[in-house]
Image (tube, rainbow, N blue to C red; front, side, top):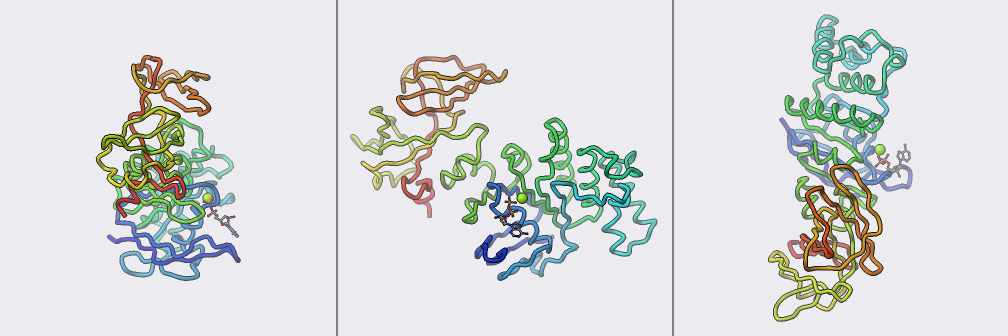
Length: 352
Ligand code: ADP
Ligand code: MG
């Protein structure tokens, strides 16, 4: 099975440049989740892969050959079923177009319906199906074609929470039992973390980071990626790097926060300079020594509380689990440092 390669893709809608010289290589059987703000070009990327749109420059290769329509199958956000066709005919549509024999089509439709537990829905029209059922039929229609690449465009975004979780599990199971490549657009970062083997974060300016879910979370390349990932939004604070007796600190509102990073050996360059530092809400702990703060909001969520705390003029979000007991001071367990101007994680600048 093959590698999927986008080589120097440029694509515009009229004069609106959506992609400029985009290159991306996706290994076989990767589960790639694509995330990014609305309008970033996520759907466009899938449409290019499906052959619904054509790039102005560059090429898309699968297994070293030009990608063709039958390599891919699309699962749409709004299900996109034919209203005048029963579920079974919707599922069979792609196969009929390939002029496959009727008996074989029936066999395949039955098999896929078994997998997705939709046998009892086959004779219904889309209007007689719930949203979740329609999406199952949409999934069956893609699955039955046995494509090399699945393209999902926010397939679960119209479903309610519990249905969403079930479908997520099922999609993961389908992935595990398949050797296809999955490309899955979602705006739900928890969904991306659950499903992905790789995550692609894009914005209007292009690729922000293409990495493993672990690296996206632990080593975000810039403030954009850092704020996109995480259950509660990361806190960004302003400080200054200082050096005393060969130790680096962040001077934050006249508090000295010691930096014991061995991975940052270019901090010297930042001494006496203003930086942005990021601390995730789940990486703030209560301590006997540290920063004094005042709680101004406490949102109880059962298994955790989301606190808003003030340190002078700054407001921070803190995640408190039931095991934590509140003390008068807080400590930052993990700090990410970003260049004040470029917003890049200085870990990346260093390793360029
Ligand atoms: P996303 O899926 O990330 O929200 P899209 O890929 O749908 O973003 O859109 C990317 C950009 O292309 C947006 O600015 C959008 O307005 C524009 N766009 C999308 N489809 C069309 C179209 N058919 N004609 C013109 N512009 C479009
Ligand atoms: Mg979209």
